[in-house]
Length: 234
Image (tube, rainbow, N blue to C red; front, side, top):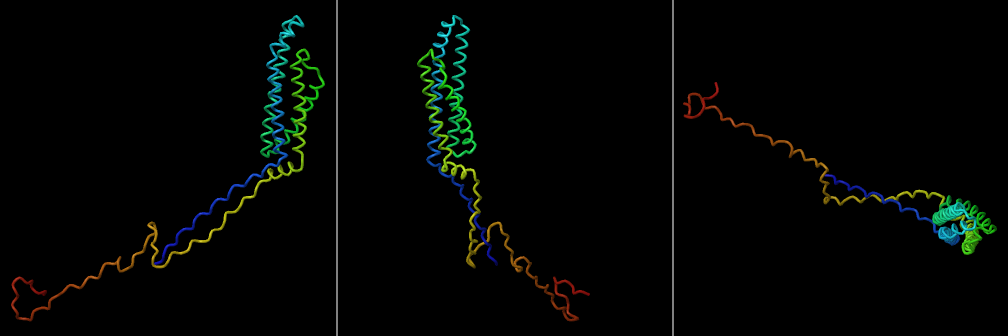
């Protein structure tokens, strides 16, 4: 009787590839972009807060309610645009910090456009009739310009470029480790699995031979038949 071999264990799945750690330049750039987004949100909040005051002031100066409504609409548009810019910059800061090359490129584009807008705001005398709103917008624009310039410079450094290049590469799949075959069980002690059919020896499957029928010898001639015995065959 041959012993049945046990099946080998399945190979373990390879561990997932580890994401490279972001350098300090990318980490600092993400926080600076988040700070620029916070300043844009502050400017949007100030614009929404100044709508009633600026509308009444423009209505009194022009003696026309339509002028006050137009001024309020302009502040609403400015505040909405600043809030959208804050949300976009914050999203790009998070994605760029996680190694997304597309977010890095979009951060350069959005940062460049916002820097141009901030320079225009600093040179223009917007909302000069409201001194506190004009000062708030100027301070936030100057802060956003400085933070954006530093963050975009950090994203362009060689350390940041190396990090984004590593995250852009796809890791090669690691082949599963080769496991040695299972050792055979010791002879004479292995039992087959329940699902393995066991052949039975021939002497157990064949019926035992039957002995031939016993026949008595015929009686001699002239012997009277015994009562109860069948007559001999003729």
